[in-house]
Length: 211
Image 1 (cartoon, rainbow, N blue to C red):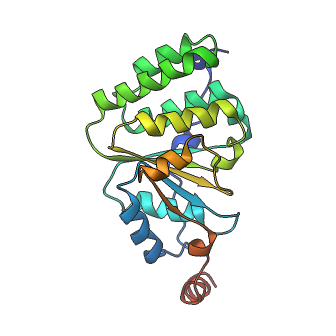
Image 2 (cartoon, one colour):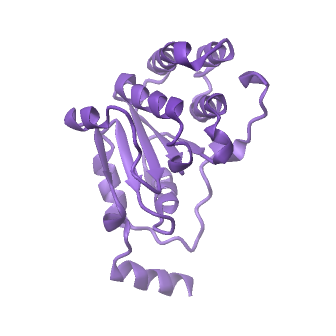
């Protein structure tokens, strides 16, 4: 099935609703706000540390437009992942996507055509999106083992303009190529389970609010 013939689930590219029982963690939101000058932000911790809830809170409080993609196992197929990646941006910015979809549709092999696709996506962002925005990939760990997807994300971060801020929420540290280079260029920020762990005051608020 060609990418433009694949039915897309809008639920995967829609920011989840904020549940009323969610505790807003101001210290983490403040830290995320400080990190939003980076190209790549890594939010890494096992299940249960509130990564998705934190990013939903961010999406509802930030002044920047937010694009969202919730990943699951079928997205390990590279063309499906790329189709949803483009869809996540175009859902928030409808003027974006026509050129990128056309290049993806005509892509015969990822080995030779991935760079052309990345450049097309990056150029189309530069042409049509003139404000800073956030692109969140939730549950990134489900696709991190796929070489083509890792290469795509790593190259995308290197080439995209400074107005795009990519957040990867993952249960383990992503194994992106050239991550040390991105760190050396001060393009990467983030936090891990030690910072995501609930503090006593947050646990008390959680029980007071939820129970």
